[in-house]
Image 1 (cartoon, helix red, strand yellow):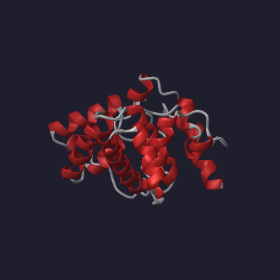
Image 2 (cartoon, one colour; image 1 turned 90 degrees about the horizontal axis):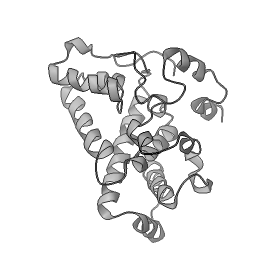
Image 3 (cartoon, helix red, strand yellow; image 1 turned 60 degrees about the vertical axis):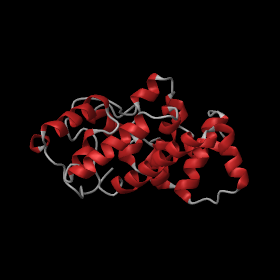
Image 4 (cartoon, one colour; image 1 turned 90 degrees about the vertical axis):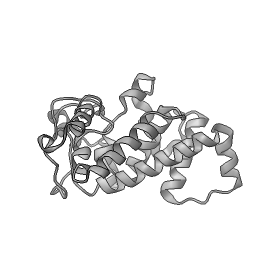
Amino acid sequence: MAGKQRISYVPVEQMDERMQAEMDRCRREGTPRPESSAVRAHVPACFWSFADSWRDIFRNGVCDHSIKELCRVYISRSVNCEYCGNQRSVKAAAAGLAEAKYDELLNFETSDRYTEREKAALAYAEAIAWRIPADDAFWERMYRHFSEPELVELGCAVALTFGQQSWLRMLNIGHHEVLPGTSASMAPGFETPEKMAQTLQSPHYWAGQASAE
């Protein structure tokens, strides 16, 4: 993550009480972290549209959250959004989603880390992101693993995160810049500014490897 920040953060003290309460939740719980919310706060309708949709479609809903979290990070790595890709869902981790499951997302079909249901979800995310043709065999695979409500919610969650992450990657925003001092929802190695700086310089850093390819 480098370069000039392209859209400023709205100072938290300039927000109304309800918005400040949501920013405090972002600080404590993440998903999303405070920086992206502080950008959206320039337009309260955008702030609340995302916050409410993220709560209802991503954090809650009919499809298991860990599946949606894997798809979220798959999209992060597909569009190379470092800001989003360096976050983790606390809720998914509490449900047992292991960090190792993030390591092979771009090669999910050949990996033995994922269940067939997880692979089907990731194939769905891949098809949405990369406009891959979806034939009868593709949809038969989807229906083996998901109900129609789950497919609707998962599709909407992927579409939401794909659009937001494709945009956020352009803004050069970083972590620990708004309401700093917590590690809520940060990926391992990004819990503090000091750890983050070290991780960004590592030859094993996922976005650095992607840029080198």
